[in-house]
Length: 151
Image 1 (tube, rainbow, N blue to C red):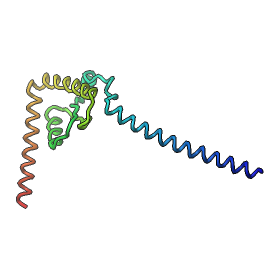
Image 2 (cartoon, rainbow, N blue to C red; image 1 turned 90 degrees about the vertical axis):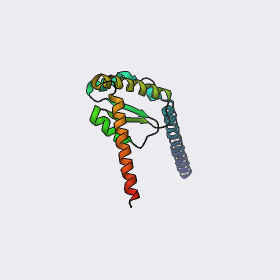
Image 3 (tube, rainbow, N blue to C red; image 1 turned 180 degrees about the vertical axis):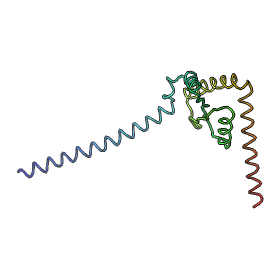
Image 4 (cartoon, rainbow, N blue to C red; image 1 turned 45 degrees about the horizontal axis):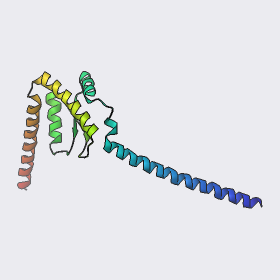
C-alpha cells in the first residue's frame, strides 16, 4: 500500500515538472515573439527624445549620426571620414525594417547634430564630408577592380 502511494506521488511530481518545463518554454517563446513585435513597432523609441539625446551627446563631445536603412558598401570609408573630419561616429540603429518612432527619433537626433556641425564647421561641412567619403570609396572600388582585372 505504501508503495502505491510513493509511486503515485512520484508520478504526480514528475507530471508537475513536465508541465512546468513545457509552460516555461512556451512563456519564453511568447516573450521572444513579443520582443520582436515591440521592436518592429518601435516601442523602445516611443518615449525617447532624439533632440535632447543629441544635445547631451554633443555636450559630452560624442556626437553621432543615427543610421537606418540598407547598409551601403561605403560604410567604413564614411565612418573614417566623418570621425576624422568632424569628430562624429556613425551609429547604425536599424536595417531596412524601421518603425515610425525609430525614424522620428533618428531624424530628430540627426537634425540636431547637423545643426551643430553646420555651426562648428560651416553650412556645407556635412555635404563636403559625404562627397569626400564617396570619392574615397569609389577610388578603393576602382583600385580593387583593377587589381582583379590584372590577375
